[in-house]
Image (cartoon, rainbow, N blue to C red):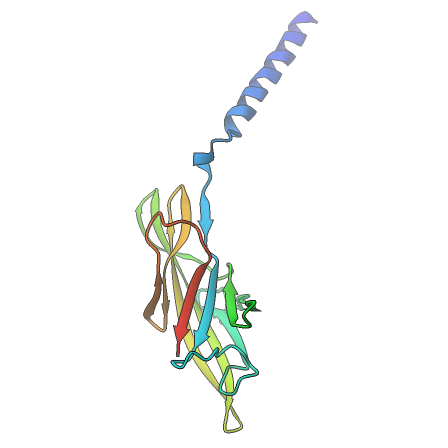
Length: 174
């Protein structure tokens, strides 16, 4: 009976040791995630083109994941408004990411591609503009962050490696 009790205690001690080692709370082991983007679209005169109440602005939109599993793979990009009544798209996640390059196991670049279908009425006719957005992400064991954004193949945002986490603000001029 005593040997059985010793085995149980030894098993509990080993289990406790394994749990303690595997669940360490070393803050350096946590990965910072920085992928939130607020996307504003304005014309060259500064008009908010996402405010559907303003003449010449877009009245509706859809966003599709180019790397989606089907031809129509919607991405949730809600339209929000600031306290100053400026409208913007908030992109958190949703589009598939593909590996662009793997410099090493501890340094990778991923990218996502989305198609924005922006609709507005011109001369009583609904006109749809299809724009593209490519988002590049930097991944290391310590950080996953947006590193570059291209809108219609033009770089509209860059972030240096190691830059602090923030909401990434992007303004598109059309």
